[in-house]
Length: 62
Image (cartoon, rainbow, N blue to C red; front, side, top):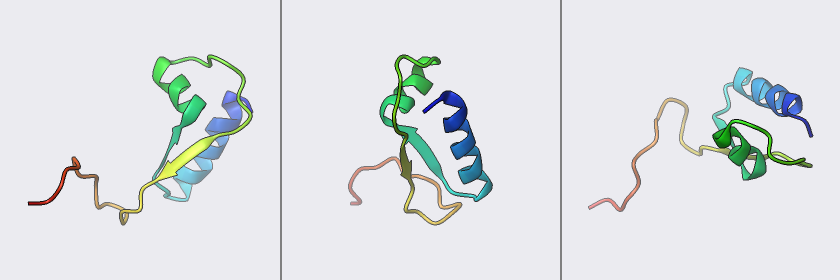
């Protein structure tokens, strides 16, 4: 899987208005700003929150 493949998949998902972000190897590479090794897959996460709900800071409600 190439960086162009990742961008293509992420672009399609964004156009579909899906809130996703990458994790795993590609997520690390995104944080360091370069591809550090070859990748065979793309790990994606998505929010279960309704669109526009935002993300909370976590913690237990009182």
